[in-house]
Length: 199
Image 1 (spheres, one colour):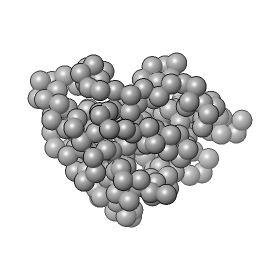
Image 2 (image 1 turned 135 degrees about the horizontal axis):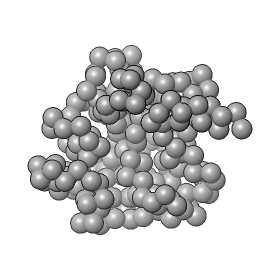
Image 3 (image 1 turned 60 degrees about the vertical axis):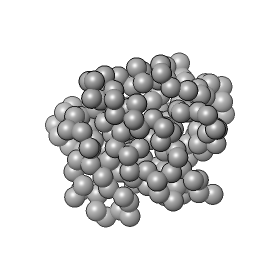
Image 4 (image 1 turned 60 degrees about the horizontal axis):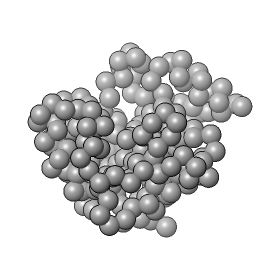
């Protein structure tokens, strides 16, 4: 089943801790992270957007490639760009460095969309997960205002929108160890991911 919701992959980070190497192309278990994400998104969404400032690297995929509208590197900027280009009332966002994102978890989040809600966001023991969440197109202008005001913390946006939190218990039904939220920031994280896969 494909949802009337856009899937947005954010790949606009600086990758400074990987010496400029694009994290989307890191391999875990012999498979590139981006291939894993694209497979999930292609199954779930008719409309897929990739936000990146290096479009030429992604030409082999059938995907709508866009670049940041504001010359600022932040996750909020990526969310703004994804919302600007989406043709649907809602968009699901994921970061490009999550090698274990589960399709079933994405379905749980997307299935939780309801009228009157601006943001559907998972809540884990680590806190809210804003880069594995659904945002309404209604958030576009507020996000834009936050960027203009240089308020780049997504938490600040959440305080002023109608937010539906998905509790840990519901998340664990589809992802018992919550590995969907594991992301790779350093070479050490990549090593840990390989060990997790082996286990």
